[in-house]
Image (cartoon, rainbow, N blue to C red):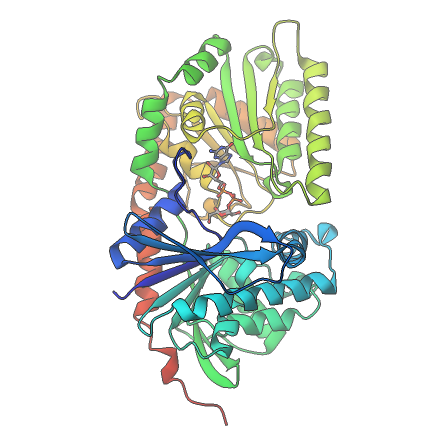
Length: 471
Ligand code: GDG
């Protein structure tokens, strides 16, 4: 294996005193460490001056990190604008929330070009480049335009919609053509793969061959791009250990004590409209309205870490949740029982792990999600002797493989109430059986395995430089 170069918008540069990183960062760092690799991306800093190619370098635990600062205006258009107010809702099938501003689309291209210009001088001819997520789709095309011949792979962490949805984006064919500059494009699920295949066919008139490859023109060259589903996993063992230990932390003990004999339903994610948080609250309200035996016997704790506050739809969502939580507590709560505990702040990772383990039900109901790692973490955190039940949206990528979960359509509040009732009453034998099935899947499909599988497939593809020049 040659050197691996990971590129992502944000870089998990190690900083003293910061909490343990998530499974994804850990897996990528393991891969980078074993190849003496480099992680490149945005520093998190913006400046008034134009973006310069100058990178800040640090080396830590056998990994090189290189970051660049971005021009403030460009960053706004690139990140809050095109990435998070255009592509994010579009790729999550939320056309009603999608905004479009040509200036933001231009800033997105410009920042990708800046990334390419700053990265190129750091690359060696044998490097394998692995680019991550929707913020950086055009990066390979920009690198190729500057002469990069290395193998370049791309992994999309979020869903890929079919052409009927993608075509709402002006110039969406350009974005599709950008993908042809990669040697390998990885998606989370077969459903996303089908979306991309449909886009190539309807948007560009390109058919995918029996091996999952598509041939098309990119930067004046005909090249072949391999498409594949590579579902991401977590550090299953690591998270299970974290949760086992966290069961004894003061936070988890306080939570358990405060519950008394009541059953805990837990949800935790970024406060994001894709995660179906209002729908979840309506599902809990349906449980309380239709199954009065649970009144005073159950508590739903929702941790909703504030995210992307600079985008208006996220602020609207926060207001909606504030009001829903207040309404449910007003309608069903009593002077000594609060059915909904709602915390709109991030929590420490080990605290969350302990809370998952203490919860009888993990309620994970996104309206659309690339994979959803919370679902996997909840299962990994359970006590094998007395595991809780995972309720999972059929629209999460995780639903494709987590066959021990109770699947729900989050738009159907009554059905969610019924499923919650079923989960709360599920006998131990069935809980164990479902948990065992899911846990063995999670032990196979870890974050590390995901990274290795992707990179092996990429490194076994023929070098892009061998492609014929298009006449
Ligand atoms: C994208 C895709 C895909 C959540 N709240 C807190 C906290 N978390 C942690 C979770 C988990 C991570 O954040 C969230 O991962 P998800 O997968 O659930 O969701 P996205 O952030 O939307 O991630 C998604 C993923 O990329 C990977 O490919 O699965 O579909 O959308 O690890 O535990 N962590 C801490 N405090 C919190 O309050 N410390």
